[in-house]
Length: 428
Image (cartoon, rainbow, N blue to C red; front, top):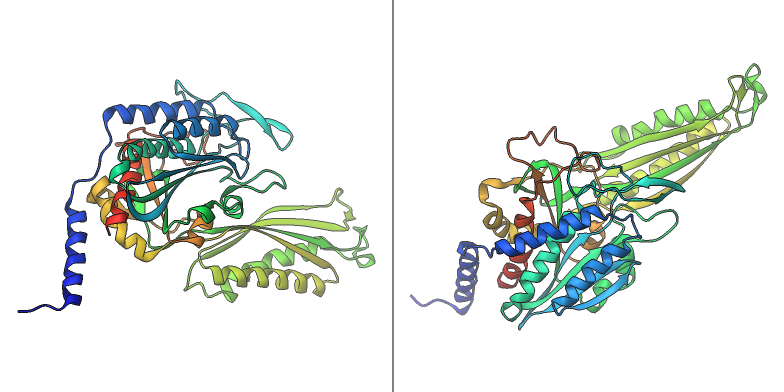
């Protein structure tokens, strides 16, 4: 039987895909694993807040330079980018880790626990890597070392992105992934794909969770100032009561998700977190301040919620004789995993972690500014479990807890996943 050139090409592609899926994953040595652990402990003991990762950046840049990579520091204030050009032609891929810590006082009993302090919102605070960014950085530093030693075998270019301010830039500063892109991180070396890992206390050590399409919610903050007219509490008709108006706004806004948005497309949440107004029991004030958060998994729904929030607040206030002024501070977009990229790289995840340790993630209402990178190019973002075996991951101290704890066995899995993503992507 004679096969057409098209059929032969399909078969050849299938054989390449099968060979990639069947091969053993690339592993790291015990020596490199120990280095990754040591880097993690050093970074954990010296955490720094968003846009203040000065020591952290120096440690990372020095390591990347020692490997012979092209290194650019000071990106988006304190970010570091390293570029490794392989010995063979091929695609450009990006690997990303975040750098910043949180204003949290560590309450673990680790020998390398953080005792660092810093200024946050004009107050002295404790600082802790309570979200695992120390693990993210050390895993990517380990992947850079392993891949640098394999330089001649690598087809294409690898861009290592160490990103500051994932937890949000302080005050009115810019920062994070959005600023890195604004400063051209994807201009000089535009990747075909970008990969990221986040350690996760809700997962058992070494287990990996992924999801095609939307994974993490957008996160947006809104402020509503309700203006009335002050009057004595015994004579409410002598003014305009912004407290009543604010109460009606709070109730009416709940109908945006329940009655105005097509939630069969994706879930959404609108929550109020701050209600402030008044100074005395018998004075109706001039003004009430409301603040809250919007979480959502569909970018079109997100835009509709913004519009409906503004209309609902303004019209509800107007009905009482008050005014409502709405400001929406757009935060992180929805973190979306490219479906084709996820399907292509799933066999790599299963080979590295073991198929029995790979799970489909639920939607996560937390947010991640990896989302900005994934809006520019196809992205894949996964969760890596770090809660010790035998411990209930559901009840383990969560990310952002002062008791957050990571089993360092996960570092090997994460480092190897970064490495194998790079090698396998070029073959598929």
